[in-house]
Each structure stands twice: as C-alpha cells, then as structure tokens.
Length: 133
Image (cartoon, rainbow, N blue to C red):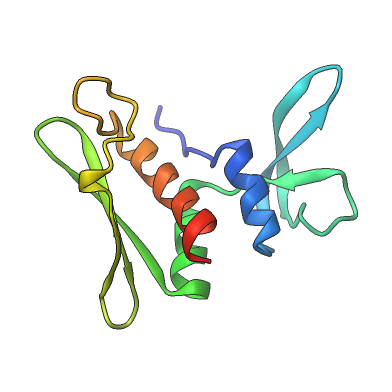
C-alpha cells in the first residue's frame, strides 16, 4: 500500500515558525514520557493555532504547495544515476535560488545524494524554511 509521507518533526516546527496555518490530518506531540509521536485525526484541523500543545504535520506535498503558493518557491527534485537531487526556483521568473547538485549532503554515503525522492523533497522544504523565507 502506498502511503503519504509527512514532513519530519523538525521541519514541522520550522513551518509553524514561518506561520504555516493550513489544516492537516496529522500532528506531532512532544512529551517527556514518550518523546515525539505522530498522531492522525479524523478531520483536518490547524494544530499550529497555539490552542493545543501540538504541531501540525503536513504531508510533503502540502508543504511544497504552501511554499509554492505563499512564498513563490518551487522545489524540483530530479533523478540522477546515483540518487536524487533538487533545485529551488522562484515563481514567476523561474530564477534558480538554490541548486543542490554541488552540496553532496544527502544520505547516500557514496554519492552524497538522496536515496529517495521524498528525502530530497524534505531537504528542499527544510532548506527553503531555513534560508529563503
């Protein structure tokens, strides 16, 4: 069964800091007893509204769409012979803001690239939040 990937807890916290306020079907809760846990809700809700001690957990696609529609940043992952890389472009001009092809900071030790498309997307979202917004 194919499942949708959620952003990591660290990326979810960055999204919350950057005022991501979309309704999500999942959320993170941090506790001293259990650490960080991901929970799923029946109905979408904005857990970043500071009413609950939770952090919204959007899917990678939701985070990428929010960056595209709110901040005009497009993450473009692509496949290479050794793994996955990405570029980040601005809309509407298409100018490249960041090209990951020389970074070699991926999880594959031999190539320095990302082993999955989802990991490349996660890194791209995190890069946008830390450096471009």
